Amino acid sequence: MPKANLPRVWKIAIALNVPAALVGAAIAAITVKQGSEAYVLLFATPFVPVLWYLIGRWLDYEFRFLLPPRKSAIRFMVYALGILIALFGVFSVVVSFPHGHISSALIMTAFWSFLLLLMCVTALIRPSPRTG
Image 1 (cartoon, rainbow, N blue to C red):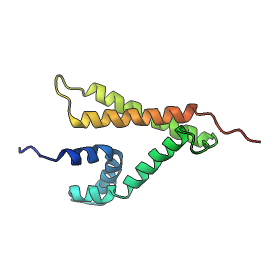
Image 2: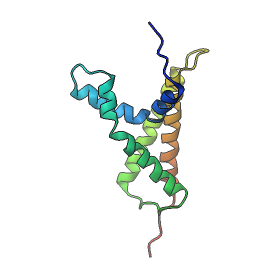
Image 3: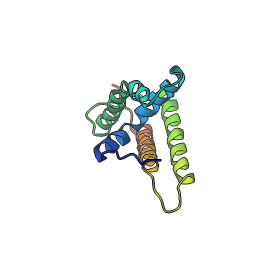
Image 4: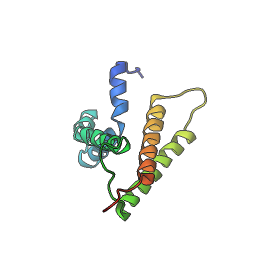
C-alpha cells in the first residue's frame, strides 16, 4: 500500500480541525450511502468556523475580555459531558499507545482531548459574574 505524502502544512491543517472533521465524517456516514473523503470535507466545512468560534470564546473568557456566562444546570451538564469525552479520548490514547511508534492520529487525539479537558475544567471553576 503506497504511503500518502501529504505536505506538512496540510497535516497541520488537518490536525487543527480534527473535531470538525469528525462531525463532518459522522454526518457523511449517516447521509451518504457510498461517499468518499470529499464528502467528509464537504460536511466538515461548516463546522470549522464553529470550532474556532468556540475556542475563541473560551480564550476571551480566560483572558477576561468577556464576562463569564452565568452558571446553570445545563452548562454544568455540557461541561461534565465534555470532561467525560476528553477523559475517554485520553484513555483511548493510553490504551492504544503502541510500543516504539507514535502516530499522528495518537498525537492529534491526545492534543484535542487535553484541550477539551482544559476548556471544560476551567469553565467549571471560572467564577460567575456578580449581580448587583
